[in-house]
Length: 266
Ligand SMILES: [Zn+2]
Image 1 (cartoon, protein in one colour):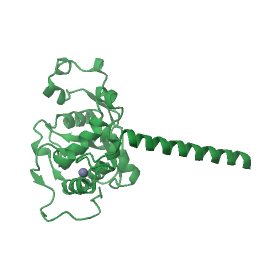
Image 2: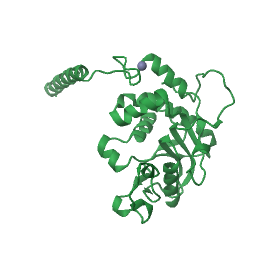
Image 3: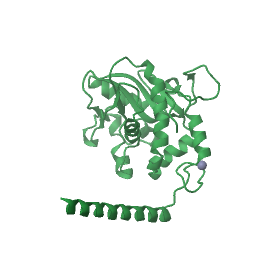
Image 4: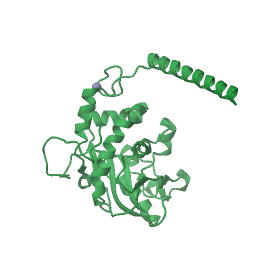
């Protein structure tokens, strides 16, 4: 009915106005600033955006430095865990700067496209390593899944790849006996004990594990173990950042980064 439609439009306008005013108030209370250099007014200023883009323009094979990645698994990293990339990732994870998701997702998309030619043809599940329950309680979101879902929403995933929540953390009380139940130091906690995850991906599914940072490789190894134990095939892994520098570049070209189908503007 026209009167109802008119009322609904008026309510929409009123709601939009309220949201606009709230956004302005939030901007005053929590002004946006560049996550790297703190320049005001933007999530990432032009100069820092350019540096981030350059740092992620040449994804590299990173598994050789992951000493605890057993058995070996091909891992492609978007960039080194340093400078702007490390700062932006920390800002997302620790400070809840979800306004950085688009720029970090673009970096991840570039790495996914660099890795994709080595995947077998056909559908591939991109399985994010799940955030631990404790971290999820702190930040209320799962950073890696957020980045992948942003890539999917923008249509920049490699052909045939879909995002799948194919891994879950086991409840603490159901962890298998052994090191998982010991008191673990900081380094120990980082290694994610065997049995800490379980697969929900369908048996036979081809999976690529996706994580934020590669350090020793223990977390990726545990994720791959869980998926394989569930009957899935793990064809590789992709990370946003690797702590150690590239050992084997994906390309011999050492010239300046170029635009291309696999390079996604940050
Ligand atoms: Zn900046």
